Length: 99
Image 1 (cartoon, one colour):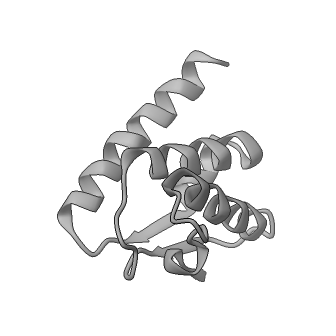
Image 2: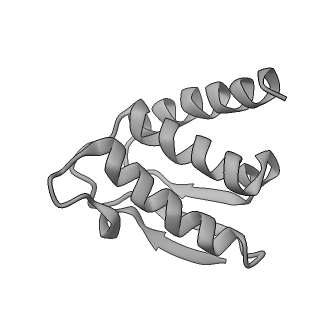
Image 3: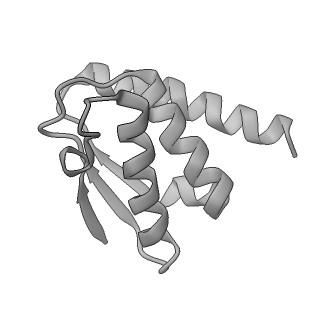
């Protein structure tokens, strides 16, 4: 398992969606090697559904929906988990509707 610190992938201008895209590119790179990924969320200044949405949708589009099962998360706050779970549900629904 490869651990990735989300705080290492913050856009220089602090843009949330761009930060999610940066992290998604790294996650995709690792997943393509066959590894699982642990994403450490400590140190992020804030997080939104847009962040998780772009990350999950990019991973799903590039590696496939099963890749989401190879992600593990180290949440700092319960609200992070709640936001993630809503985004995960939406990503899975979007994939199944567009197949």
